[in-house]
Image 1 (spheres, helix red, strand yellow):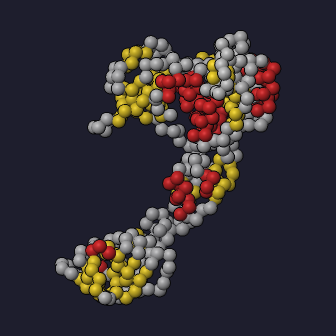
Image 2 (cartoon, rainbow, N blue to C red):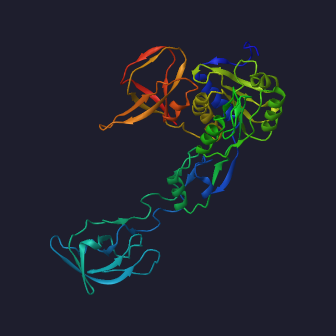
Image 3 (cartoon, helix red, strand yellow):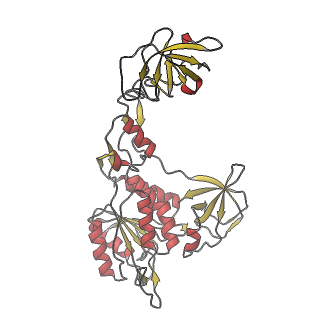
Length: 411
């Protein structure tokens, strides 16, 4: 396939990301209502406001005794008369007046007239007399109604990923369901006559298929439920048939291999003939041959075609695939990229932007460092397995002394 084409090629990574975001916006998945148990990790489809005050009533933060702070002496012991009990989950018409107190448990509603709670450990009980040994401050150990949220206040914003804490916040408002972006459906293809499934014997010239499990694991870690297809042989008719089938059934088709410029790399020509290529080849290392296309005659799916080397698969998924899926779901904020200092120097001898494998090091004084792995070849999966982040090195050859602050993309 000639590179003198209408689509962008050999573009900068920043341009590729801009195209990814634009294309993903045109392929936003619809919203759906799901139970809280199914909403973990999903992207909230719209803003969520509080329905009730939280806490819904004044309640105790401690096991102890509810009292009137005005009854406490400035110094020494105070003695109050115990007139009742208030336990969590059972509201009763209990009230205290001057010189009285009530036993109370954590989370129980505060009796009328009380404004303070003294911890049980700071009291002594003798019959119906409660001796306050350590006087609490006015209002101590009391959670006031609505001090966390008031009705109508913003709880969560559309586009936020639903973390366990955000799910709990919605649950505290009585929400049993949430409107979220439907998780994109993803088909995963690996290609190549040389691939053999783990567990089978290898013939000369064959290698085991590691890309399928790597991609499936990355997608599952991002909350998706991908479908793996059988490995495709280097046969254009079979590749075309499989891509057409998947393109009509899934939101995104991810492929590994057959995307460069070799005699057996059929995918670019097929997508040029039947789809609409948004870009092919990005000035990044590893993973330059990556391709993004609309299905066109292959269906409504997006096609993100990754190189075949396993480290290239890892880098291109993290750098382009994950942002694509996030944007398809309407994620409002990009995932955080960290800053760390290089633990050792690095010589960058090429011009492309590089995603170098590295391992985080947390120093005793509180600094964050990242140790680059010298095994930087795109076939060196051991280096990727020993690492937990990609170090982002900008375009251009240069020296990176130890201590240089670099951008880091966690796995």
